[in-house]
Image 1 (cartoon, rainbow, N blue to C red):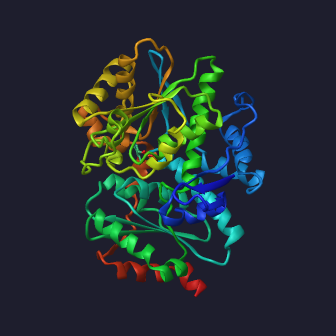
Image 2 (cartoon, rainbow, N blue to C red):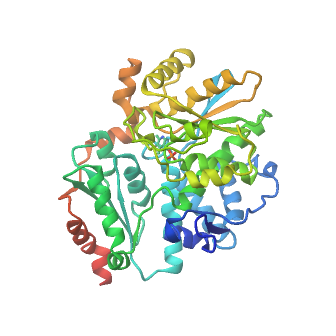
Image 3 (cartoon, rainbow, N blue to C red):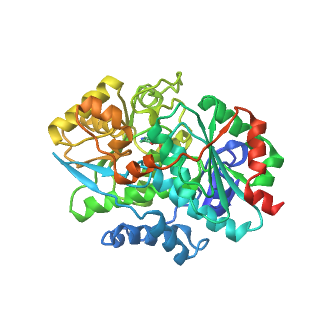
Amino acid sequence: MLWQNLKVPSDICDFGDAVLRGLGQDGGLYMPQTWPKLPQMDDFLALDFPTRCAEIGKRLLAPEISPDVVDDIFRSAFDFPLPLVDLGQNQWVLELFHGPTLAFKDFGARFMARILQHVHRQRTPDRPVTILTATSGDTGAAVAHAFKGLAGIHAVILYPADRISQLQERLFTTLGGNIHTLAVAGDFDHCQAMVKACFKDASLVKQTGLNSANSINVARLLAQVFYYVEAAAFFARKGLPAPTVSVPCGNFGNLTAGLLAERLGAPLASFIAATNANDTVPRFLREGTWQVRPTVATLSNAMDVSAPNNWPRTAHLLADKPTGWLRGVAFDDEATRHAMRQLHARNGYVADPHTAVGWAALDQVRHANQHHKRPELVLGTAHPAKFQDRVSEILDIAVPLPTALADALEKPNLSQSLPPDKDALRHFLQDLPHIQAGA
Ligand SMILES: *Cc1c(COP(=O)(O)O)cnc(C)c1O
């Protein structure tokens, strides 16, 4: 499968190179150049989840990655449950949050980590790989768990000391080994500025083999296509019409993956982009003008993005679709709380604030569009326990922690402190054991 830079069309590469590079020339995003024709989605509908992923993945990644490697990667990356929960009234939640860090980002991060390790071994075995990323909480945890224990790769994760919840911190600072967590005496912007400065330092990038593993990487995008196929298979097997899918959106990676799945042939009827008060895309879809306002903090903070970095990909996939095929809906915090309470009272379902935004969007679009009787699907992007304090306060119930998370709270925090200074970070990177060993 060849990938083409949306900004520089002459920049075309295979999947492995796109994974190693992250961004293309001029900061452009890679998208499939040609669309592999999957024989018949029907042929895949009877398989179980990992087998279906592997069968489709083999076709997408052949001949670059051999079938048995693809098989291994899917089986080890997606080794947690993916329940589709019936809410009643023809509504369903696809719960994407049963991985180690309780949010859908585990799918993309775990798949990417394994693909990166494989491509690196094949193409650049003599070079080190160092994953460097700054986090305000969630991404860092997914990346830390995904790369934990992978030979030859070290991951360094910066976060603002004392500015993330203890629960968030314990999710990724207790792992040790090849995972290095740095508590920076500053805020998230300091962390991000330090990371950016290191990526601009060409000799450091080369010496340490820096890679960002962020959400624009094609491996993360491709991984997310598979759970949409899974949902489509579920409805098709039940003999139900293709569903309308509502996606809680921030950087629009998740929605882009859904549109990709549809383009490959997964039976999905139409999409809804659900956002919080950071509503650049819903306003754009309604009014036709792209106007970015300052980002505001909300209850669904993983969606607090006003300039979504995957939007060029979404726009590319919308080019040949009729208007209205993707609808955009935005909700403020009050509407989010209301949706959480309604969903709990009406359907007995406890949703985190992100998932609740997606569910509220289904309701709104149905009211505007009374004739349609399609099943409705919302993607559950985070486990309610991940936002324990908010959820228990809003719903006035106890929200128990899953065992893995409760256990992590008992383990020691292995983070080192770092001043908000890029040279301190540079020295830390140069002193990592795999860099020293290669020097
Ligand atoms: C990252 C995240 C989102 C937003 O996903 P995008 O792919 O950035 O649009 C939504 N919900 C949760 C819980 C997240 O962690």
